[in-house]
Amino acid sequence: MKDGNFLKANNARSLWHPMTAPSDSLKNAPTIITGASGTRIRDVDGHEVVDAVGGLWNVNLGYSCQPVKDAIAAQLDALPYYSIFRGTSNDKVIELAEVLRDFFAPDGLTRAFFTSGGSDSVETALRLARQYHKIRGEAGRVKFLSLKKGYHGTHMGGASVNGNANFRTAYEPLLPGCHHIPAPYTYRNPFNETDPARLAQLCLQALEDEIAFQGAGTIAAFIMEPILGAGGVIPPHPSFMPGVEAICRKNGILLIADEVITAFGRTGAWTGSRLWGVKPDFACTAKAITNGYFPFGAVMIAESVAAVFEGDDTGRAAIGHGYTYSGHPVGAAAALACLAETKRLNVIENAAARGRQLWDGINRLKEKYAVIGDVRGGHGLMLAIELVGDRATKAAPPKAQPGQVQATAYTAGAMVRVSGPNIILSPPLVLTPADADTILAALDAGFASL
Ligand code: PMP
Image 1: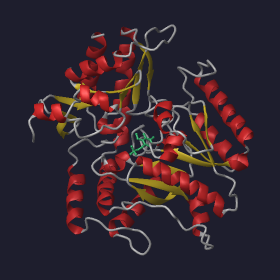
Image 2 (image 1 turned 90 degrees about the vertical axis):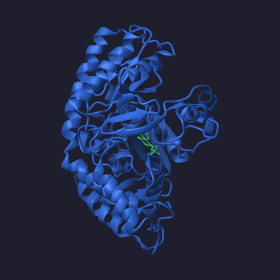
Image 3 (image 1 turned 135 degrees about the vertical axis):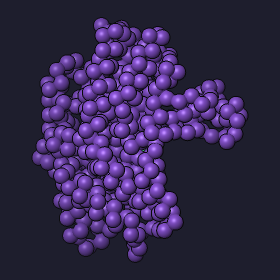
Image 4 (image 1 turned 180 degrees about the vertical axis):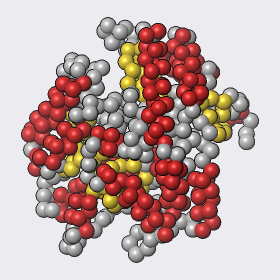
């Protein structure tokens, strides 16, 4: 390995970081991670901390998941690559599709289309949704609806349904026909509604209004995260997603669940759709499907949608979409091992228990520090702390404050993530009670430093 000072000095000389201004990277060396084990990461200076970010919401099983490492190594020896484009397949991907079919059966999702990550999965679902309507003779259904504050990756389709201007403005014009409704975000919403159940109803009414305004027959699909992640961990009221599902059904609109974060146990349920008792038409997955060890994803498809594609032999159902790495055998082998470990460890139980521990601890911090305006979570291991300059007015905090909390927490033993005014936590689902205590103590130190 190169010397730490060399790495810090040259980090941004030849590379650009995602979601970062190149001028920032040139001025400030990032934390350079060089090793990890269990739930901990180690930086180039040898400082070791609990990874309360879990990579990027994806390292659910931690960094030492030997069965996944072994599966990857064995697959590289057996068959490092073969495509599944027309006319060929590979053994691992067939095996994986069968396992995923069982895993997602309670959600009514029985077919898989493989991708290389979350943005690819979103792009795939959007395209297949349009094609579904064309096969059925409703070619006018081309628009997409989504939530403000939603995040759906960064391909042109995903960016178009994203609900955060930061990921849109520089890249406009985006896809025409994408429209957004307010998110059921209790702390801040255009209705000034503070009751989550009533807010859910208001947002559902906004969805009905938008459908009436656009014309139901012009809309292909509604896409949402079962719990909004990157937008600041916003769990909707339990009535919201079932309400969306009912409105979609009534209007012939497909429901796409973007489960890139929520699938495979993060919420304390096996999938976000199951958490809310919803059966979507598509579920986009990626991230934890391979524990972050290999870039991979899958779109799961409902039986009813599959029947439309599989029952058509006019040519309209030919899928003109796919990636070189759709069905990559090494990714498939990694995913098979991950799913086996995920089930063997029954991670949902620990996600729920450690989630409660963090939730209680952060709420205690809220009593101690007035800068904490809102605490969100309560469903497994995805939580956010929103900082404010003033609790009464909910004014934004001084810009440097979230970063200062993060930096101090890091020194005190935990890596947390900053997103706007939010501190976000999405640690591995194998987190121990002691790890959770370390995260809470590190946050306490972070807030005390302000
Ligand atoms: N959808 C959601 C809900 C996500 O959280 C993300 C990534 N954070 C994506 C899509 C995009 O996934 P990827 O970064 O793997 O392309």
